[in-house]
Amino acid sequence: MKFRILITAIVSILFTLPLSGCWGKVQLEQQGFVVAIGLDKNEDNLIDVTFQMANPQVGTSDIADAPNEPSSDIVTFTAPDIISAKELANVVVARKISFDHLLVIIVGEELAKTELFHHVIASSLVSPEMRLANNIIITKEKASTFIRENKPKLETRPHKYYSFIIKEWKDAGYVPISDLNSYFQQQEGQLFLSAYATTEKQEELRKNEADYLAGQVPEHGGDPVQMIGSAVFNKGKMIGTLTGAETRTALLLRRKTVANYYAQSFPDPIQDEYRIAVQIMKQGTNKVKMNVKSDIPKVKVMIPVKLQIFSNPSLENYSTNLSNQNKLKKSIKESLENDARKLIKKTQKEFESEPFEWYLEARRHFWTLDEYKNYNWEEKYKDAEVEVTFDIKIENLGAQDKPE
Image 1 (spheres, helix red, strand yellow):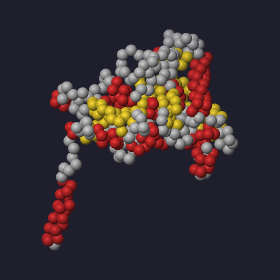
Image 2 (cartoon, rainbow, N blue to C red):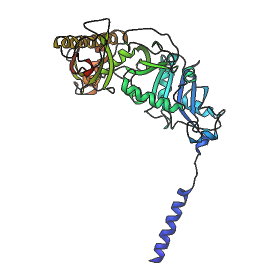
Image 3 (cartoon, rainbow, N blue to C red):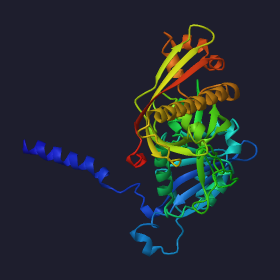
Image 4 (cartoon, rainbow, N blue to C red):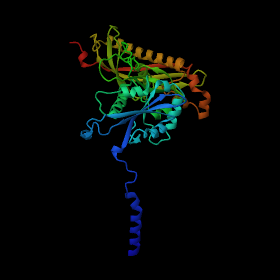
């Protein structure tokens, strides 16, 4: 009995010895953590791949050991794909390149408008480090230029900047959540919307504070980057853009939205030279009814929202005057529905597909996937009759708006 116990103990020790070593261990200072990858078009199906590698010592208690080091290192290589560029990087970079902390893939618009973009992105998933949670940002200029010009004033560490800005996407609704998972899910049957950004300014002044594309927002000071609006993709290829206002409407028309509340201004129905700021709060999911029994599908969408009045520069009495309240409610309802109708018409005529995830509702009306494919929802949508209704309730008008 004792001999058997001894043999078991020896065998157990022999099996655990290989697990107790440090083989494959890489120290923190030996790794180059890539937080952003930039992709640009080159020639002969080659691409320029830019890596922005964070310096793990900058912005931490170890800064005393590296007082003069930059917060990141930016290098660009020409290669057939991302994985080849990663291997090539060690010709220059003395650290082991790691994608473990990768947050965003930044793509120049010129490349995004070619079929090569989809081939590059799809083939990169061979690497287990390329996670589907990584976000896509399309830039008006070259991605390499965008990465080098992006120098946020409040964030020393680049990964913090991208982490914070992605969180703000969910709250503001000016840009869509555009990760790789959504990109591959939305390849068939609908449009994919990706975040749109630039460091190039062509400022324009508009009354609607959301009706801008990146680079058009008037500003003084602040960071060089503007991120508003979306790049529109159909079958892996960029075909156009939507403004921040159009992007918000597109997200609002989806059955489930990420940004469930945000602030927006509307014309004052009594004094139209003023605008009233309102917080829009989505109440549950949209009700989408669809009739696909004919060649021209009929779609009815009802969107339930609640409103809170944030500001009233005209000082009209909307708090106790019910007639004024009805005018305000009707005006906002008409404005939201008109915006929705314009966007739907644009997607039907210009993009010939929809970004509202209505294809999921259409698919429910068929017994088999083959029946749905034969119906060809994307083709039918171009002539669809769509009716959008906003069910609006004014929750409060703010104590500060009550007249004395």
